[in-house]
Image (cartoon, rainbow, N blue to C red; front, side):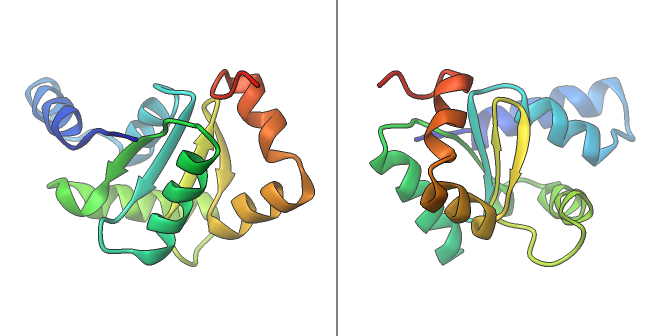
Length: 127
């Protein structure tokens, strides 16, 4: 797994210098398109841990943004809840810059066999 807490912090610092009011939804979209697989997570969330283990077990190296370790993580959480239409805000998975969804959607995709093709298409899996 590739954790982005430090990079996220640097991103935050450089963004604050450029603009005091950056839309959290824009940040989500920008961060989500930065890697083949991106997971927005909380370090203390058991479902987040489970989804990270799922991808690692498949041989995928996701980029993980731990929102509880970012000063503006709560804003990102609210933006993710808007994207998902309410409910739980984490974990949220993007593959190839596209929203897959929360844990239920990821697991449904895994069970019905559509997750691996998505990962291959995004370049996260080569087998």
